[in-house]
Amino acid sequence: MDYPENPSIIDPMEQQSDYYDRSKAVFFVCIVYFWDHQLDRVSCVSHTCVTPDMRKRNEQVTLFIQTIFDIYNNKSKAEGYGRIKFLSLWSDNCGDQFKNKYHFGWGSGFLDNEGLLAIFFNYFAPGHGKGLCDSEGGVSKHAVALAALHGSKLISPYDLFKYLKENCLDVSSKTTSALHSPDRRDFLYFKDGEFLNFHPIDLKIDRINCFHSFTISKQNPLELFSRNTSCFCESCRVGKFRECIDTAFHGAYHTNILDIQVMELVPENINLGLIMRESLLSYRTSYDKAYFVMIYQNANILRPTFALISPGASFNVATVRAHILEPYDATTNYFNYTLLKVPKGGLCHQREHACPKLHTQLIRFDHICAVCLRTAPAGSIVNTAKLVPSLGTKEFYVYDLKDSYSEDVLSEYKANRVNVFGNYVVRK
Image 1: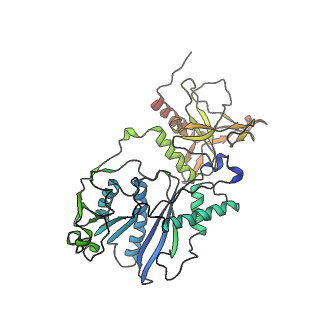
Image 2: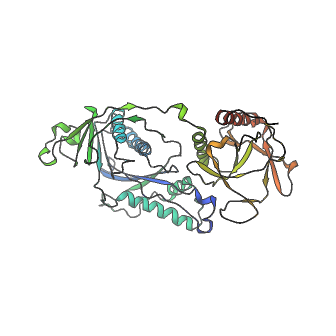
Image 3: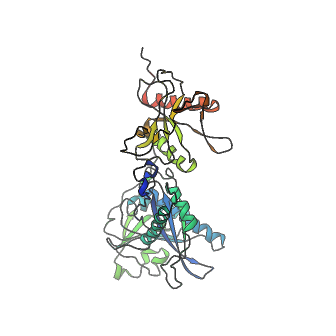
């Protein structure tokens, strides 16, 4: 398993446009080898996990592994062969992702929860070159790049996933005698916000970097065995590491006792910026139209300020690009005033572009107090803003909040504004 380089799809004609800035994704490739009872041989399947979350962290890796493991564990049980008993993981030595104390601590809990007899962590030598994971990542990147060049609108990580899922499952270059050639491909999508944003455990382990093979057995899930080389003797293969018959060649195991402490995210650490960023990122796949958000500009502006976020808005770590809109009546400063103007044909998505249209600005997630979207009783996402044709002119449209949602959205805006930025201050 490995992370190939991040793919990005940029249309040469639109490379300055916000519409294409968010077409970046993380690809995590996991090559699975398992005994296929129907074929009566070892099968190889390539799984590519696609996500817009650009932070390649261990919490991301463990969710990918658990998801893929569940697929095969459920398959084995459904076919009448029982649960999986052994899991062997191979990866590079990246400290943030694979080779760290959190990964081994997770492995201890995973082994115990899934009823595994043993779990193996194996790491290739540093600088050992590229492997099948990189090859499969290259296949996916080449496929979506070629599709984009031929007119396919791949403007989000979810678009990449859908295209790959529909067009790239077959492995055209496979051969019957090639063990390391995938029989087929599969693609999984993970929304930003599905991953933990903190380490759920903490523990201390000594001497990690100098070893390349680590193992945990059911006999003692809190004891981590480590050596420089992987051992495949009849004892080690079934998790009886103390009975290894090749100690003369491999040397004795080094052991660590995993003193795992469960950590919980303190609710006070969840701020408005984090909540709004996760909310907006979730709408990137569940709502494909432009929508309004209500932002805090400064203490002197009491009425809500509206911003328009396009389907292809550029999301950064702390900011998002949006068009900040003028109120219908710029002279009012009334708390409940929600009329706003949208220029007709006057919105520009390009940066560093001199034109008279309204351009996007960076707004901070922690300044967004409410999103003008709600879930309808039927389960669909609906826009809480309505067009007011009677107030429109040749230059602009006029929007207002829908009556059925107005009180709810305004209450959310005011509550977040007061909680984060303090009480309203009316200046005479």
